[in-house]
Length: 340
Image 1 (cartoon, rainbow, N blue to C red):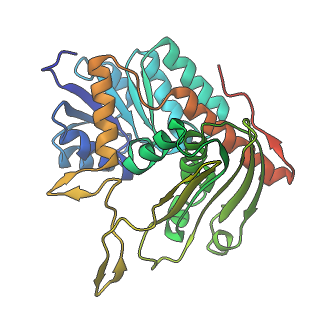
Image 2: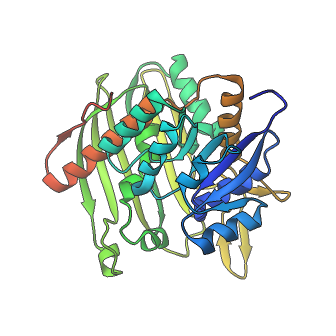
Image 3: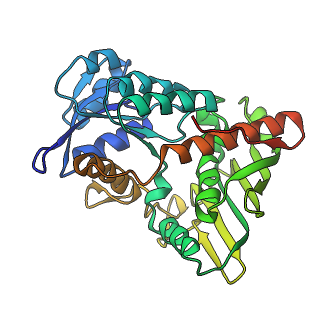
């Protein structure tokens, strides 16, 4: 890719996140949106038409073309193995988080990338200035040696009912905090003891846990804790209620993401709109998602490393696997070796 050529991108999946990605690519100065790949004629064509792209029914059909340089895969986590043939064809992929719904699939993806196309797993908080600054502060030694850390987030129950059992709260929501806990602290989770609550979702006809709480042993002697759930009332002003902190021997870092600084009171009640993840500003997607897509394109153009190593994405999946095993077994579980 030359400095003047635009990276030609196809987005696989024209649904909720695929549409955000499609708009972000369409507005990118150094990339062009070539196609939406979706087996649904209705969803795929609607998203493609909205952003001036072609609709392609299958990944095989897309790979047969010569006008697509890279792919963004924005499918549900249990469908992420769809990225394997793309990687094996030597094409780079930006894959929505989590890397996969289990460690075995994540390792297959990593092996396909090692032999084929480059892989960036889209952990969007790696592009959030608050978390990036917190990680840099801990890594600099300014707070001393980390002693304990915690991270967690809650969202509205509507997300759980929309997912309708197709993903665990651990993978859909909690994978953010599993990564944040380890990235911010600079320590790997080695063992977990987890408990889940399942009252609300089953009462709504959804086969899913409501929330999961976890105590973590970490490889540098730290202790950590994680929490995540889709239990907030539907009328709460914000869709994300999140906190992360690392306490060290000399200080601490604390991130509060319950409020992005804008408060709106209207006839529809209170709202705390998104101001950082993918807000629309002057008609364009800005914030963390735009930075993620731009980083993917620049790293390919300049042949530089991605800020999110594949190993870190596999590590998060391995911890999630252990969390779900602990919820099932009722005892502490060790995190499996995620390396390939």
